[in-house]
Image 1 (spheres, each protein chain N blue to C red):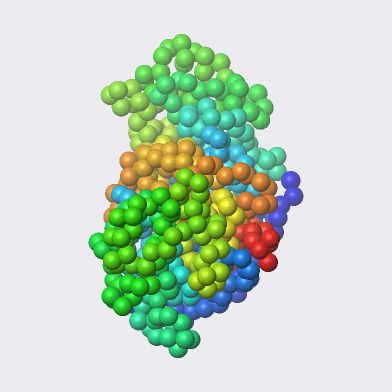
Image 2 (cartoon, rainbow over the protein chains, first blue to last red; image 1 turned 90 degrees about the vertical axis):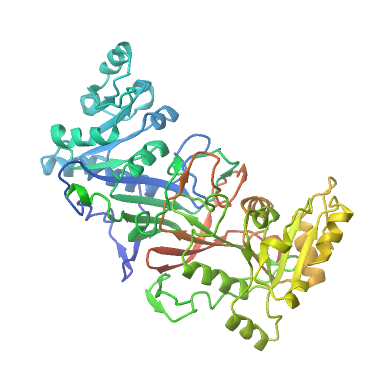
Length: 271
Length: 271
């Protein structure tokens, strides 16, 4: 895939980047003690839509799709919500050169693929594509306690299934699940690729450190309630500083913007 | 109001701007023959929301509110949808120094305020605030043919009421209304400040030339269907180039981005 010219425009000075360089310094800004450093990556239209006809594919450019893989290749694990995987076929892998670079660093070729589910309804065989069969063991279903035994058995045929810490009603307890991922599975950095409900749950629990937002230069539209935004759930409390993000960098490829934000004051209690 | 430091980061080189300079070159890129040059200005959160509890106020910073007035002061007229005016109290004016600058250029102090309505339900007295009574004559209601005579009479007490070209069912025909505004009222540049339905109607009719989008560094959330996006209506057809916008400039104030886009190939037939 040929990559378009990338220009870093913030922080100044503006600089045209060499291929694949955009997020070379992606090491977490902080190493947290009790949970992974969590980054959300989403692509949105100018009118805030992250899906078109139920699917995210087609909003970002080829460069965005390459950047997505680059971000993945720098994380220990990639997490996607069950609803997002149900909505469309996804290739959650990295490119071969990225896998090679990981091997050189003595990392597993592919980051772990983490799929939290409270229902067990995960179309792994049809919708999780592009994985070599040897990589299937790196697909980890984080199953809430209410997932039925027979669903669990089906999932185990094509993935590793872990019982996730759960709430009283059997849903995945996302905060305790992140703690488990760090403590027992050595996940220091986690990239989350949506969907909007998973993003919202993580953000409202104060578990997100950074947001990578690609702003595609297009409009999608739709009536209220059709096509999704990057987060979905209760309106967030609007506190002056706490809900404000800090812009870390801006890159530009043609008219598409690659924005990186830090959540302020999040995770302080975990240091 | 003290203005924060504004940095232009695109096009490069990055440059810190003097007060009020951000959109000094706002003259329309093209003078159109049959309709005004149309610019939409909106402020959105990172998750694409333009309202919070039904209101737009509170999303942008004080700098955004000043930029909004600056954009207004450079247009011949400002248009706001009736639903937006019903939703909250709005001051659609400019600052005194901007009014002074307009007087020096032999322009009317305030751009015309244009309010298209198909129903006549416009709370002018309660929600259109901050206008001196001498400026009331510059408030122009563009009434669709189905607006009742008694509504029209009420509106005439506090505004100029014009019968807008209408569709067969009596709604405002926005394209012919823009043509009328140019031909009979000498409106060469029009700034539109929403709401989402008016924006959508204008965009789908191919009547918009530029989009000014302020991206506030915050997240708002809400369930599907709550809180609005910058456009609302049918999902737009996704044509490769036509629906793609071109990024013209990026300014930054703290972590708030001021983005300016051009609609590609729009208005060509009007040249």
